[in-house]
Length: 250
Image (cartoon, rainbow, N blue to C red; front, top):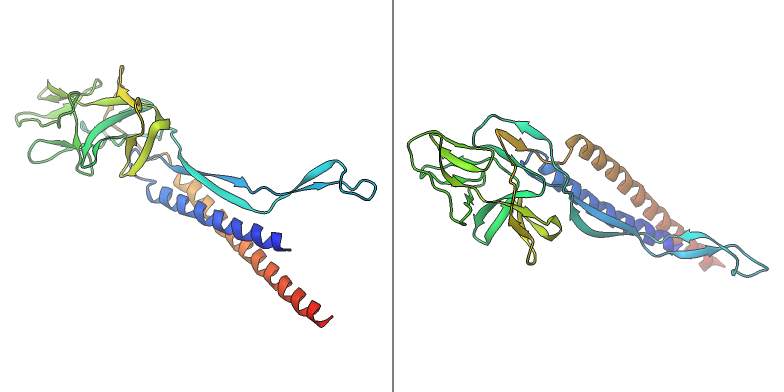
């Protein structure tokens, strides 16, 4: 009977972890360049059930009695998000596994959020205010004097004249970790390299790859499943209480 307690309790813990991941994804369903998180779940090792053979349990195995579920590590879903057309000359999206390099207080980081802007000093910034780097790892600053746009090769143009080129890298996504604000940090040597053939789509933005409708359905399913596991835990506890009371009368 105690196995039922463990199964229900571990199920509740796993469902809570699943809800936390879904809530984080839902909160970023409209964040440009966001990649949703997922988590691996696995069954805890159970007890093998074997068919009785001549009064023993050495017969053929017929299945396994599980004792719960374990929430494993999270991983990033790297599927591309849908593109939206904005026709803003400072909005850009990138090819698969390509990222824009930006400067942060922690060093160079990478993002697929291409909603860029200019501040009053002519600095090219991300929506969160981080400086965009050029191919020489310097912040891009443009002088006043014309309309600022980007082209399909990543060149920054002022009045149609190229003045800089944004740094676009190709990454081994298995060697990137999230840092928040749609930023990714490299892990290990060779995680990123300059993109040999950068793909820059001007006037478009890659949206989050989180489907908010599907996420809402999953949240409802998790909530219902948590309630069922909670009721199972309560039932198991009541059965144990009754067993202790009745056995005490014998």
